[in-house]
Amino acid sequence: QQQVKQSPQSLIVQKGGISIINCAYENTAFDYFPWYQQFPGKGPALLIAIRPDVSEKKEGRFTISFNKSAKQFSLHIMDSQPGDSATYFCAASITIQGAQKLVFGQGTRLTINP
Amino acid sequence: NAGVMQNPRHLVRRRGQEARLRCSPVKGHSHVYWYRQLPEEGLKFMVYLQKENIIDESGMPKERFSAEFPKEGPSILRIQQVVRGDSAAYFCASSLNLRGFASSSTDTQYFGPGTRLTVL
Image (cartoon, rainbow over all chains, first blue to last red; front, top):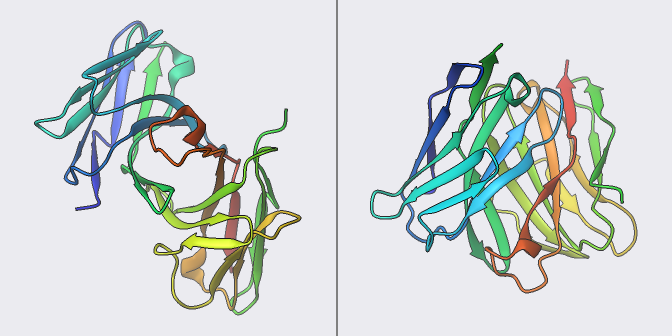
């Protein structure tokens, strides 16, 4: 019930295309859904995040779509660029005893071909 | 404006040795989280600490692993008698967490660059 399932494992998109990564969760107590971007040898960096009372959030080329009834959320990268090539992790968190415990998906390795 | 710092970045240990991983949070942050990332996998929560207190260690193995966040100095993740299965990247994150509400921007977790532990 604490799992977050992410797909696809890897994704290749042409430059200028739209990259879409999907995640699904079971626990309805999750109250915060961030996406992290990780480059090789680096730590994850927060990209964009959403709360369950909002169905969509857009920041620049990055958009999160959130479907509360289906318990699914997705990341869309518009006009994908080679610099977007990285591993993307969705996550969900629940606050317990003041701790924001992040549960991560398995990751998607995104490659943008020039 | 230094971010989360971790050292060492790479650590090699032989089976049975001890590994000590250090994490200095963002200045002013008093909440520290440790995560473990196995190759080709997502990060797994290990432990959450506030200054001088372990709040949640539900993700940490019961044996050989311990963590602390003293009043002064960095947070330490300690692995005793390491085994090959401990080889992984260990990430520390810190947050400000003024009010403890998960959706507040002050609860954003900022990650360090990680320590890559290799057990021979």
